[in-house]
Length: 331
Image (tube, rainbow, N blue to C red; front, side):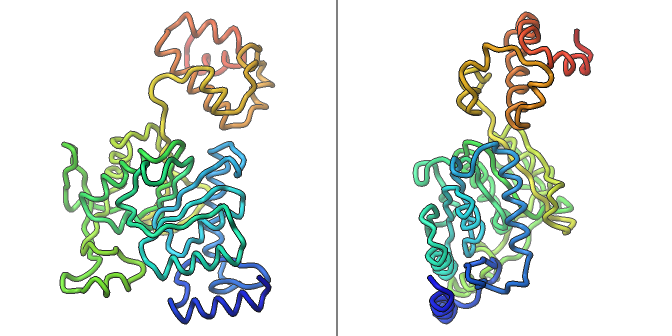
């Protein structure tokens, strides 16, 4: 589309569905969905992209990314621009109409949008994803829905998930799920007497539940861990929010049992001959950070399973690890 056609079609979308409320997408030809001077959305999109690029260690074209409750589809569109296969799920029809228009304006064939309730997420319905973005939705869900939702994210994820959410500062209420207790605070999303039409019209609120449950940060971490995520990182840089009660965590899905050298080769795209070589310290430093970290974790896993003999064998093959072993006080 040229500039005139983009503006004409966007005007019709706005007339039918209202203005964009949050995602200031650059549609090209100098046209933005909100305002070219509003940099907040792009700053967040760039931060998520940096996290994904640093932790995945993969070309964008190799990644399948899911954006849950994607609003106007901005993040899914940005990932598709970078080359990923992206999917956005959104329940509100006006938001989906805006996302589909932006996708058409950008001529992106590697981005798909679906109208669905994210609480129905399943691997059977959508397959698996290397990265799942869960931003701006967790704190709109009530208990107990929030916990099966996190479990569904784990089941659908084959890499890691980014949780960008508010957390309660105080644990005023306790809720139970599968024998575990979680602390948090309840907030009002809608009034009991509000019709479904009124609830759907509140674009930045839940789709139906009248209350939401904000877990404390500790309870959020417990819920992520109990769902099966094996490593959880809190993102400090890039800085995304200045709110004292909002943070970003990356939850990594670990392997079932010790990873084998072959699994490591497949996961990191190293040549099969990698494990037949001797790595010097210089060689190790030259490895991309994500691959070196993954390799180190594999060594740690094998050390627990096979013990001291394997350590000496691995240290003989990878001399650079002697420095790490010495720093831990081992011989």
